[in-house]
Image (cartoon, rainbow, N blue to C red; front, side, top):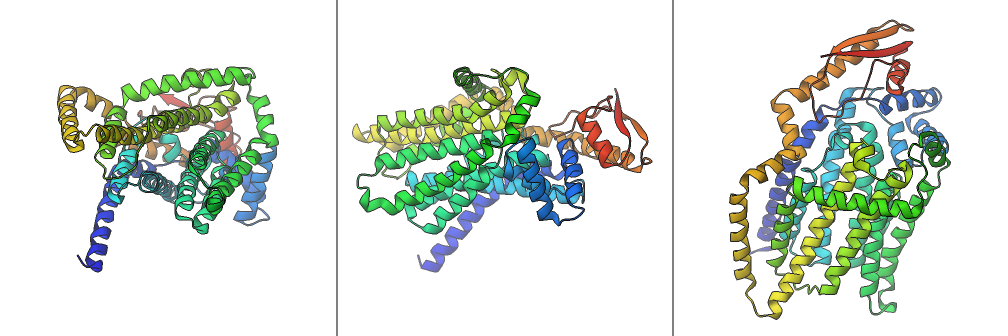
Length: 498
């Protein structure tokens, strides 16, 4: 085949994979399309409006970030993005465009990281890397609730965009190590600093994952002098990422917020560590039984067993990968347990964004361990002169039989996932009705006379996975109070009629 023919074939193949990625992510693009502002979106708008009287958008966002850093929390990336927030000051269209962009960037960063790990670290073909990447996208969009990350601006600012930064940081750091290109190291450092300015849960995930990668590569280098450039390209972005994490963690606002919100008491480090293990084990069990995680694990395992890659994985390497995965999962949930002073996030924390980041981390680690286990199995088969293709065919046949036997359970588990729930909400008109009803509610408050007491009677909203802010029959509730301030009314409350 000619070079031009080969290039065209590669382009068409990558385009086909990109179309599949779009199809998998489409339900979340729909979810983003119906985003509405609420709660912290309004409180941020009220605060930033003061700065915008004498400054442009960027200057006011920086001033807002500085004050929040001193008084509430250290999430500098999230607060800057919130300071630029358009949803209530500009238009719903601007909000929804940004939320759609967040979905696209998240999918791109996730597949890019997985593809990089597969092709660079595991020496798989580009097509196989795409396959594992698409499996990863499918499963992280088919686990726990994602509404707060992809249909709420504040959730996207503090969680989604920093998480995208961390995923890109990890991907470029791996590329800088294997390709030896300075530009990748620079990009890794930039995205690491961006990611480190998000929720401490996201920061914990990124720093822990980077540390595990750093240890893995450093222990595999035999000649330090000959690889000094590669080591620097790997270490320097890590230093910048950790520095950003320290800036975030050391914010005076974190300590003030903890004192103001403390409910369960200050946890000791030992208790926090134990509780983190408890939550990890609980969520692992849930991920393996409530969703399609086992099916995706099996598919990733099979792809690696059938791969032509010559990577030889030992039992020690597999065990080390499992230990690294446990470390990453524990560190991801550790700051949540410590900050909220609670031993069980399922019983005491209703924020779905916290649950999702934790579940996504566990699920992704399952997929990557499955890949390592697949190469380990391939190596065992090779050592025992057993045909890999024959064993792979047997595995596929067994998998088909199991799917047929438990097809009802498989479909039920798919129904538990977000993609199904979003499309079911759309089909049953719940998504559109909830979004339009909230828009109409805000229009009523906006039309009210300045300084008045606004009491609105609304039919109960249909249950939906879309992020819906909580407004109640209590004007002093913080979310009600912020809406009242934004629309210049004295008070605002809602009577929900069944």
